[in-house]
Image (cartoon, rainbow, N blue to C red):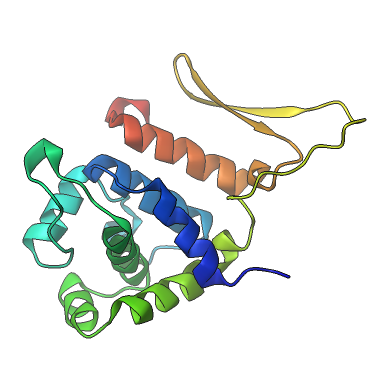
Amino acid sequence: MAESPVALLRTHAKHAPWNARGLAAHATALVDAAGLRPTNASARAAPTARAVRFYVASGLLDHPDGTGTGAIYGYRHLLQLLSIKIRQREGQSLEAIKKQMKDLTGDALERKIARSLAPALGSGAHAIAKPDDDAPLRWRRLPVASGIEIHVREDSTAAGDDAMLAMREAVRSALGREDLR
């Protein structure tokens, strides 16, 4: 029996806590893997640590635990950031998003995000595929930067082009180096 999109989304809570850069990278990977196409340039931009801090200052994201470089973000912050990026890609302004988010409870926010990301969540990218013991293992290699590669077994559900590219962008974002793009 297939898991619900909400249950699949909740599996991402185990990756918490994040710093601002890690939170931005995780949200970017999920939104990109879902194939949500942006409607404008601001929606196309992947969130950065700086954007996360801006969203906190603007009241779009809850304040993190801790301050400065020690600030820690949890699952609720991930849901909020995903909501912002999804709605931006739908063409909504930050002001409109802020008004809508004010009225959403945690459960409603989670269900809404899960519905939007269902294609990426249902892809099984979070699951580990069991290899056929008789078949030779084949791997896909994806260069990230000089000296950095991602290796994904071809029989894995995460070996699709969209998932591979999302992983590369998430690693680049986590490294925080614009010169890698």
